[in-house]
Length: 363
Figure (spheres, rainbow, N blue to C red):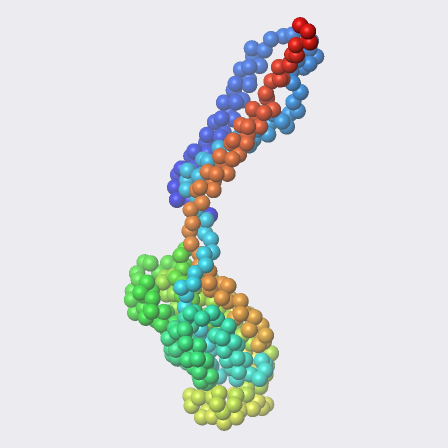
């Protein structure tokens, strides 16, 4: 929660001032007290009231004053607001390590299947774009509602050398800038506005799925700062395990620039590029990319977890945070407490009802 007028909190001083005044009047009353011969007679004359019944109205009234005084500072809450006007840039890693078979049949096949399922599950009208990255990053499909075009492009994913996570983020930013006039391209210098995530994110979101760490191009965190300056969130997914596994890709999963050569079926052996390797995900960088932009990092070690992460993303992506003023709620609560305290005091302190008289018959 934040305050639009924090200096107005000086109004809270009204409560301790009232307490001080009450203490002073009570002390003055004791000084002018009259000595009586019997306290029992005085107690018998007064209506019976326990100490808590005397204090509760006062506490309620003071709590109401505190709430009203805080309302003067115009408090604001950062809340998640749903939006339907959103586009999703899905950036998928197609580096050579995606041939690892620690996820059956291999990481690339599992990622393709999960991406297809994700696209099919989205509501009609949701715009989705596709970016593939290895040593370079390229926009395969600009944000579109055409699911058939997306599915066809996903089926063409092929592995190649290198992992350029940062470049994939920049490519995604530029793809969003082409369709959203409120987002500047990466070639535009935003100057001092590049200070981190702000409240009120753009509805467009970037999702980065990778199984490794950045090996070439711009640093991912530097690219994430560019996204944050444009109020774009990035959700990152670390895919795969750290267990050594053979690197196996079918001929149609390997491009001419692949680390495995021009094609053919590569099986894991005892050594070389085809041997079993342990793939290390740079989770620290992926977490920081998500944190800098206001997104989240997810870990998926198998196909089932990847499907679960992608299935849950719409709930995250469909919300963006905004500052909403909640002054009226403070005033409402304060007024209710103050009136409740005053009402209880009047009710409990009311005098005894006057005796009722009834005329005798015949008089």
